[in-house]
Amino acid sequence: MPLPNPHLPDYRAGMNESGDSLGASFARFADEIRRAAPTYGAICEGVAAAPEVLALLDGVPAPQRRPVLLLAAVHHRLLESPEEPLARHYRTITSESDNSDPVPAFIAFCAKHARALRSTISNRSTQTNDVGRAALIYLALSPIAADSQAPLGLVDIGTSAGLNLHLDRFTYRFHDEDGGEVRLPGSAPELDCLVRGATVDAVLDTSLPRIGNRLGVDPSPIDPRDPEEARWLLACLWPDQIERVDRLRAALTVAADHRNEVEILTGSGVDRVAEGVERARAAGCLPVVVNTWSLTYFTPSDRVTYVEELDRLGANDDLAWIYLEAPNETPELPWGEVDRNISLSVLRHIHWKGGQRSERTVGIAHPHGRWIEITDR
Ligand SMILES: C[S@@+](CC[C@H](N)C(=O)[O-])C[C@H]1O[C@@H](n2cnc3c(N)ncnc32)[C@H](O)[C@@H]1O
Figure (cartoon, rainbow, N blue to C red):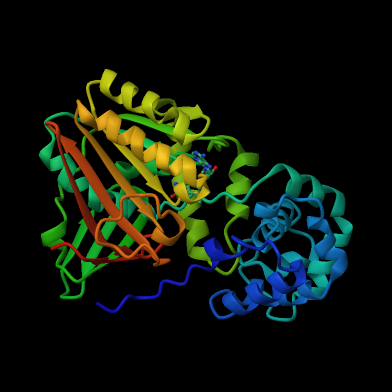
């Protein structure tokens, strides 16, 4: 099957910048993203030759010393300074985006706000929460829910602002290449997902999953009710991807409105997943552990421990695990027949039921859930 290329610049960028000069990594990043994100492409090309701007990343640990951290820090500051000339180039701030060269305004902005930018850069790490992935989780969850007598207890590892814990509350439009379409009404945002390689009817059970417990784990959870925290999530998105911003704002509203129905554990998923599973069981639910673009942030040995922990937790009691990750970044996960060298987002699930363990690849997906190529029919 030919593999579609979803373009993953925001995740790949700067993942392995060590050994590379920072200027060169900005230049390479500019090349990668220019077509999909012209504003950030132009800015990164300009920054590659601006040592005074690159110096803002001095002293930052290697894993975070990447273009996306500087871009997010500037965007974060700019969201509260919309009067700045640079804001005219950001469609997240102005609807009439200025198409002239943004680099002079970017450099001037960095000089003026250097102190605040340094503080953000040293205290934050890039952190997205893309609710478009809820459509993919929904697809994997649908047969598990249909099969379970008990309500589901979501245990979202790397939950960020916990947005995907509300996946049963959003509106979905699933459609296929044969013209089939299923619309599941709910709150904004409306998430649109193209199903390739199968009909929607074949892969989707339209009854809403019954969710009885919602728990997330993250070392740096974001409180959706706190405007300052929410601003950091918005800043991690790109001004060239305005549709993601609208989606995020709508999902933050849902998460803020229902924050008291969610429990968040602060810490690493590897240390706290067992606690999350036990809480779901104590609430009379089938625990469903979910990790979407989170295990890439674990160390390899923590990924090994996490997999062992889930096998242990599923050995004597029923458990489901849904994961959407890139195999090449998380080769320690059970990828079955999937090539571990691919850098695409692969959606799989494992089900421990009555002592039996079964695993399934649902498909290869767009990293933000816009489409999925079903490989299991
Ligand atoms: C790219 S975001 C993905 C967020 C969310 N799962 C989604 O799909 O939108 C990665 C998240 O993993 C979290 N994270 C990093 N290391 C972690 C760890 N050891 N345990 C749990 N979460 C972690 C980060 O704080 C961040 O919120």
